[in-house]
Amino acid sequence: MPRSSYYYKSRGNSAYNVMLMNIIDKQYTERPFYGVRRMTVFLKRCGHSINHKRVARLICLMGLEAIYPKRKLSRKDKEHIIYPYLLKELEITRSNQTTK
Image (cartoon, rainbow, N blue to C red):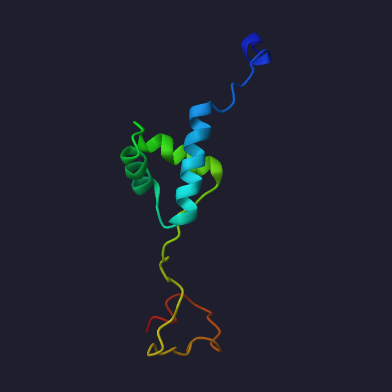
């Protein structure tokens, strides 16, 4: 193990990061649908010179996620016909038996 890794002490969060996290948390409680991009624009309008990657890291560190309608991939349509499986009772004994 390298000596630098053995004696390493993490610096923790800076006071500026904690202040930004408080602002992000306050804004998230008011508008939970804000993602990284809109939160970055909000912080820039407040006068903070901040990058979207830093905002994304802080939001991820806080465990926040924007609320938005998700895609409904596994809902079946009411008009969709469920076709029966015709090969259910058939015993396949040779190749290309089911393709003819």
